[in-house]
Image (tube, rainbow, N blue to C red; front, side, top):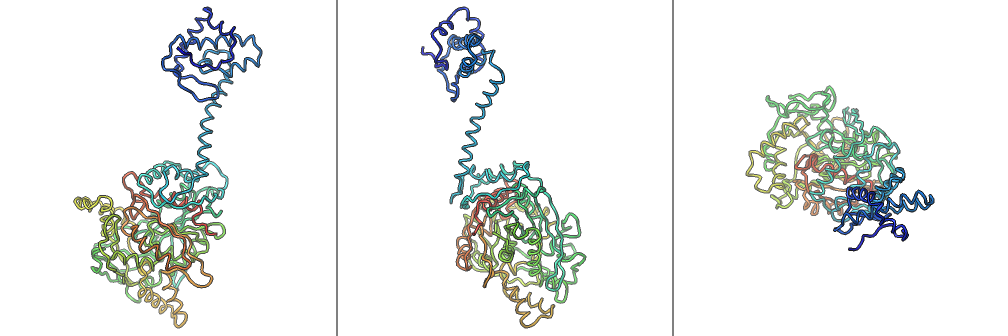
Length: 618
């Protein structure tokens, strides 16, 4: 039987003879027992990986191999110090057990050195992969999404974040559901950066009236941990909710941006929807009271909209989409009427003020996002604030003039991916400026139905009672949000209503001639990009859409949204779309395996875009 190779190739013939002497059998037997305990199926060469020895290994052969170190140890006492060191360096793991005279410190150092080698190789490999990583045009594999997202979560270092290197990052076309789940699991398991949360309540004066506004600021407690984008400036995220909500509707995603990546995030509430009367900012009761009165906005602290200022109307003209709608129609000559006519320019001024104070130009680049009908408002602002660098548009409706056509494309009913449109007949909106839409459980139902269709197919109708219970439970949990809205005149570019709102405001202010026309022009321009000499170009836009979104299907982007950005805006901005293989319109809504919906994947996606250079235009 062939003997296994040993590391003591230079052993002299005299030493080999000594190893066979019967005097050493006792030592050899003891060494054999120790060698069996130390995994005799493997031998190790100095400086090389472990290799498996022949499977049929006898105790006698192990004893012979183990006898040599004992003899060498005796010989080392008589040999020179340099020769002893050389012999010790060549010893196998079995030899170390029997070489009792080898200093413990040297053994420990050798073990540490060997343990460090695979770690060093792993680190080098990771660095190489990171340097070569560029997001492909298709969905990237899950491991490629991890490294950059994890870095801002480190909280121990007080050093200011460095400007990330441009990577030529391009967005994937789609993330699979499995990738979304993997990102969510990984990101939510990471520790959060300690945050400071501050409410900002301020007052502005616009169109002759005072307006109280509210927003919430989320930022790292340590200012040095505020993340820096590819342009070398601090990252500011400005968030607007959709038609049903207030700043709390955006709190989950705002905290992901701030707590996981170190972005400073400001979530703002539409005029009239910040509930100043309670420190919790939760609206009491229901939207429609038992006496028939309705919930109304608070545009100024201490000012009340009373039932004598409006008429409650049941509207069944949009029943296919909403069922029967409840609206509060403001009476002319009341403060309710004046507020309904003037809140849009007031909101424009308030957003400029908030961004100017929280994201100073020259220090911050701002990335704006508006959920649903909040989208046209952030598009309205993207050219009006100098340091807005991009639109991170997840489930975010576009400019009002584009949203108008997006709405008509599906007859106002939207479309779920994988199913045909229910309607292709245009259904333009005609909402008057003086009508406040009061939301109910029906507004959850008009999303729950299409979402169940996308997630479960037509079989979802077989559990309709259960589905209705989910809808009513959702309503009970969310009715403390404002749940009223009046922004359709902007979001759907209702020109006649915008003009009438401007005319009503001009009449109250006593404007005429060029001043009146200038005010009308201001209102009518809000759903469109700013044009003319010196106008800032529309910054880069990156859309993100959920798998089961009713209003944001891939088809409507391909057929309406992207062509209009390309053909109707000059110069045409950089615009791309990525689809997430999970999620619904309220993209932080929990679903199976996704406690915050696609929110974590969305936050990491836009962090990579900002730090990877997608929004850098110069």
